[in-house]
Image (cartoon, rainbow over all chains, first blue to last red; front, top):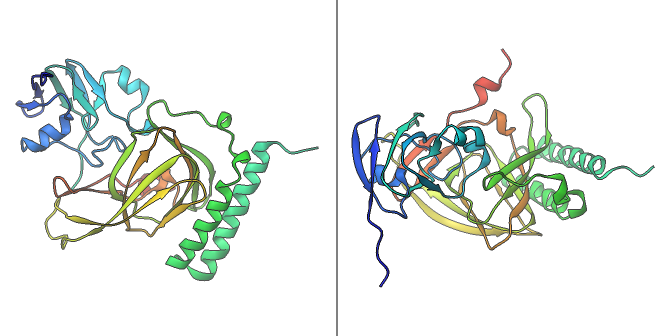
Amino acid sequence: MARTPKPRQVSITNTGQVTSCAADETILHAAIMAGIDFPYACASGNCGSCISLLDAGKVSMLPRGDAALSPAQMKAGQILACRAQPKGDVAITWLGRGRR
Amino acid sequence: MASSIADQRARACRTLLAQVHAITDKEGITPSALHAIKLKLVALAAKQDLFPPGDFAMPVAQGRNHPLLVEDDDGHGLYLTINLPGKVAAPHDHGIWCVNAAISGRERHVFYRRTDDSSTPGSATVTRVGEVTVEPGTGMAMADHDIHSTEVIGTEPAIGLALYGYALARFPSVVWFHPDYSTVRASPSRRHAAMPA
């Protein structure tokens, strides 16, 4: 029987909160489900509103538009929380501020 | 001397925009005008020889827009779009009309209607009202505040033409709806920053 990967711990530096995130879940989704007021707009890799700095750990990224995250931003350790799935425990700081 | 593909493409794009203005000058932006524009865009997209893949770089990630003709004076923007399998966009309205037509590949567009009264900031509900798969020979048209989501389906890139009432660099606020969370969020408008002082 396939083992279910252990949920990852996501530390959000802006608020000091820590939330659990499944291996196949995005960081943004986990944060919203935990009631964290994380900035976002498209939540689908198109706008860049949830751009964040990956302070620690590794993520894999779901498909996204080129304009939402440049190669230079990726090189600088930035991710889109709406596309990022943690490969282990991670710590991030959101850099944007979505609008309601 | 025979003109290059790029010259022929530029000429075809200018002709399309002239036809679009002839339609909208006469009718305004109405459902029938958008339908007529869609037919023109589908006809242009069918001229695949004008859009050889080698002329347009593939996305670095999974989605990229190549400007074909961006009008001065706050006019329209025509783009060649490339989206790879798996690329999605959550339900959104552009705040401006748009028309799409496929050159190759397939993209599913699902249409929604907002069902709440907009009285609670940040909250919204939408209901699904229709769906169309844009593939070669077909297209879709949306008015300013129509809501759609997109998803590339199949195994090949969805390459198409997209015509917007404003250029992407001068877009108004795009409003994103999230049925799973019953929320609504807006991307900042680019119109103020793009306007000359």
